[in-house]
Length: 373
Image (cartoon, rainbow, N blue to C red; front, side, top):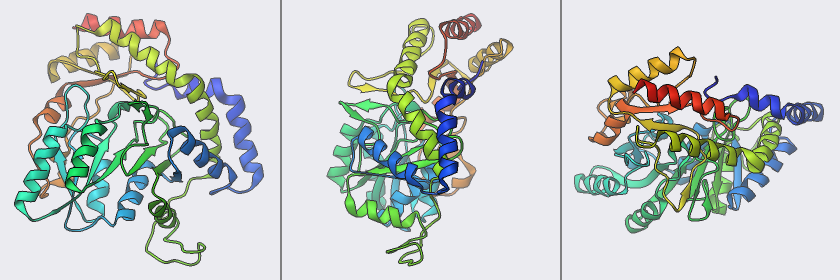
C-alpha cells in the first residue's frame, strides 16, 4: 500500500500526461512556455482571483509574497507553531522575525485567540513592528479566515495564505488560495495537485503586487529579463511541469477531489469514537492533503504505527517538532509557549490518503488501527 499512490495516479492518467509531455518537449519552449501561461489562467479561474503566477516551488511562492510587501528586518510576522518549516523559514530568510502562534486541536490551524494574544505581546514589547500573518491551510483545511482577516483589518496587518496543502479546500463557498491579500500553493508531487518535480504558485487580486512578484521571480526584471530593476530570484516553472499540471488539474476537478472526500468520510465513519478524527466545520471543505488522527499519547502512537507497519501500511507523523523547538530558531525573539502544538506533535498520525484508495484498503487500515488500540 502506498501513502499517496502517485504510481496509480500516473497509471490512470498516463496516456494524457505522456502526450502532454511529448508535446511540450516538441514545442521547444522548456521554461515559461505557452503551457505555463495556460496553467496560470486556468488556476486563477478555478481559485477565483485575478492573478496567478507560477514559480519554482511553494517556498519561493511564500518568498515572492514577502518580497512584494517589503517585509524585512524589524518586522514581526505571525506564523502557526504547528506547520512545515518553510512557513517560518521564509520570514527569517527575509530578515524578519517569525512570531509563533498556537493552533487549534480541532482543526490543526492557527488559533485566532492566541493570534490576538501574540500581536498584543509584540506591541507591548515595542521591539518589532507587526506586519503580516501567515495562515496555513494545514492538511487541506482552510484556516479560519473570517476571524483572521477581521483581526488583520483591526491591526493593519497583511494576510498571507499558505495554501501549500490547501488546494481544493473551501470556506464559505470560496476556494482555498483566494483568501488573504496574497495566497500561495505548492505543486510538490504529494500535494493535492502535484507535478513531477517541484513547482509552486502565488495568487492575488492586487495588480501592483502581481507585477512585483512577476519581476522578482525572474531576477528582478524590468521591461525584459535583461533589464534588472531590483534584486530578485530565479524561480520559474518548467513548461513540462505545467503540461503535467494541466492534465492533473482536469482529473482533480472531475473526480479526484470528490474521491479524497469520499475516502475521508469512510475513514471518519469507521474511526470516530475510537480516535480523534479531523473536524471539518460545516462551512468548510478540505482538499485532504493528509488525513490525520490524534492518539492519546506518543506511546500509543508508536504502538499503532508498529501494528500498521507489520501489515505493510505506511503512516507518517506531520509534524514531530513544533516550530518554537526547531534548532534553527533557537534564541529567536519570536519564541512563545504553544502547548497545543507541542501536544499535537506527540499524538498526531497521518494515514494513507489519495484519490485512488479502495474500499478494501480503507478497511485494512482502519481494522488494523482499531485492533492496535
